[in-house]
Amino acid sequence: MSLVDSNVSFTPRSWLPLSLRDLLLGIEAGKSFTCQARPAGEKEWGIIKVSAMTWGTFDELENKAIPTGKQFDSTKEIRSGDILLSRSNTAELVGATVLVGHCRSHLLLSDKSMRLLYPTALSARWLQRALAAPQVRSQISKMANGTSDSMRNVSQQNVFAIKLSIPPRNEQERIADALDELLSDLDAGLEALKSAQAKLELYRASVLKAAVQGDLTAEWRKSHLKVEPASVLLQCILKERRRHWEEEQLRKFKENNKTPPANWKARYREPVAPDTSNLPSLPDAWCWATIDQCSHLLQYGTSSKTTDNASGIPVLRMGNLASTGHLKLNDLKYLPRTHDEFPSLLLEERDLLFNRTNSAELVGKTALYTGSPTPCSFASYLIRITLSPYVAPSLVLIALNGTMGRQWMKRVMNQTVGQANVNGTKLASFAFPLPPKAEQEVVVEAVDEQVSIVDYLNRGLATRKEEAFILRQSILRHAFTGQLVPQDQNDEPVSELLKRIAVERETRAKAAGAKSNPHKSAGRRKQKPPK
Image (cartoon, rainbow, N blue to C red; front, side, top):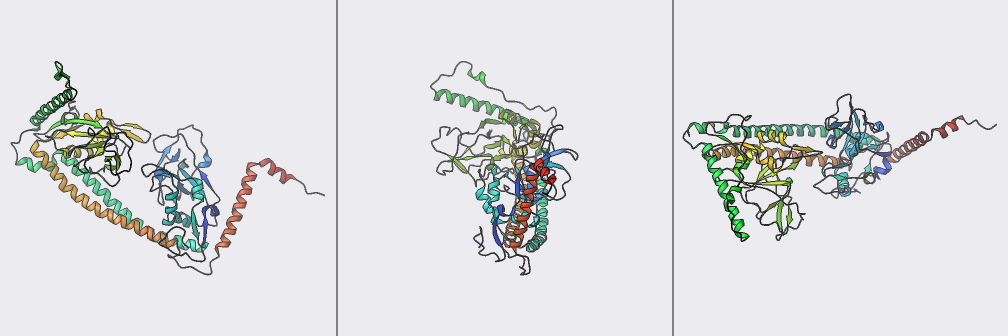
């Protein structure tokens, strides 16, 4: 019977159900090494990163360098022919295995990875593929600890406990050959899909760049020469900003039953103006403005612990922000409706949400809250931007998520191990091109028109990728339930395979014992036979 997958009822009689403990000679854990952020060069020693081990693909360039002169255990070096398993990774990749081909670099096994010591009696290609089959993935998913929002882990004991159905050695090779052929075609198709997606993202970036440079509305300006310039609009924005501040102060005085003190209006803080000395020129009638000048509020979200209780108010987190500027609402957390930070932390339609802490690639991604779900709040790794009604939120969104915003964030972010941060003070100083009010909506509409095409094509590619994933799982499921290649009654039975594994295990144990006690071993060799 199948060990895991309820969709498959039988495996061939010639196969034997065993655990990895029955098959492996051992598991070697990696170690934690002091390393540098830069990749190791050809002649340097490096440590492999978890990102180097995705399904079946080993990328030796995904590594960090070990500082020259540092002591390390060279027995942890990764070698060609190794089967490596990702011990600590995301929910999708924890337990991912790779078979290392020709490894040209001096790389060490990290503490987030394991080396599976397999016997020569087993087909390495078959074993690596078997560990990627749905039957095994289901087991690893249940074994791994941690949450879906963080790194998950599997222990050596978990890996030893994985159950497989073992075919004869010759059948293992036939399965591996068939999978190599089928999955290589599938992988080629996936690479083509990924290439198409990458080209679409480049096109999206070029559209956003053209928008903030004024290229998308160049023809519109030719027929609208008498529009009010943005410099005049900016003065209106600044006046409205001050008026809003004064109204808010008066509201607070009234709420606290206080009389406004003399000269209270002098407490108003003038916003940060843009430093245009190194900024490019803009179309006529455009001007540079900062988020500080054009916003009423920059506010950090809640750090209170959320739950899965959907009767509360949803709290958007950094994972809910897509890099395209949209919100993803399929994984929400909640706070009680009576939470003491409400209503001050409830979002309003037109608010932007800026991701202030994330990886260097994702920090700063920004999304627009369009009023749904309502009511709704946001978490502490996000900053709410409430803009002046004279500024289209999508315009600032385009600037932050485009090339201009990404380049700015690289310059201003603070980086620590694995994380980058852009705080509210730096965000306030971000300068973006401000078109006249009439042109703002034209810019946004032009971007929406172009990007909607990109999104439509991306959805189609995503569907094709999902279909490819389903097909891969079906192929693997059939392969490891005996339905991909025929059985041959002339194959050596699995019982003989197990005998050879037992001999190899015993030989390895004796060699390890002799190595650990060389004096005793040498003494045995020198002993003379009795007369």
